[in-house]
Length: 290
Image (cartoon, rainbow, N blue to C red; front, side, top):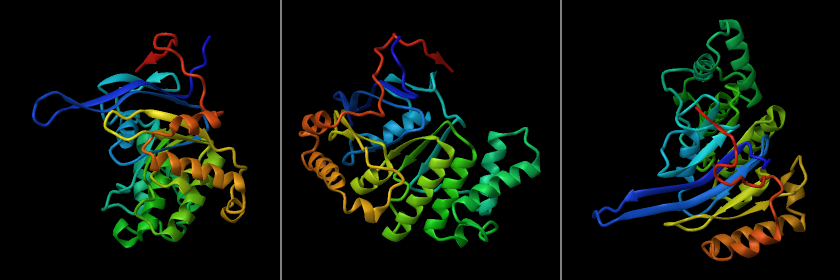
């Protein structure tokens, strides 16, 4: 029996009507990949290749034109609390405090929990991301980095099966971004959740992930390869900067991006993905729709 990855994207295609009504625009076609349970995967590619659309389809926020997405054997047909999403715009409720935003999501995820347990659970995650003392501030009273920390705490506190992140640190300054990346890795290593993240930043992808999925340029984009990031964990930026393996990987990814996906065969073949399971053919796996 063929193994099915925890996150299984199977021949996904997304098209839009051509503006002048003379056909259709193919954003991406026949995109297939798998991510194992507990792995941290990043997807990189230029703007317009459909990365965010793929994430939104996995989240159940956008329908695919064709193809399927499965998470833990269940077909994704709509948004669900088993999939936590963090966007570049944190999406906090402005009238609620930092704690209130986390509590709101935890109550929705665990409606049978008593109030004291919801509060304790929410506070635990706020403190994990370094927001002790800021629990009762509203988003307008928080810095951009602190708002993103609330978003991360909220997402992890709902204990989703998979965490989906779309350029979550893109609007932050370099120092704040590095700090929150470290908080994210610390939480991920404790909770063991599967993470799928979109980024334009090669260094961010290499610092965070186990595997990097490479999207060719759109329109008609595709997954051109998958690179395993077998750098040792826990990762330290100063240590990575002295590792030739890091610069080898970085050069390959930058070469891929600069060539618009035309050099993907060399990148993909030189480093086969250990965190991506073999994909099943359509119809082989007995996967249950929901």
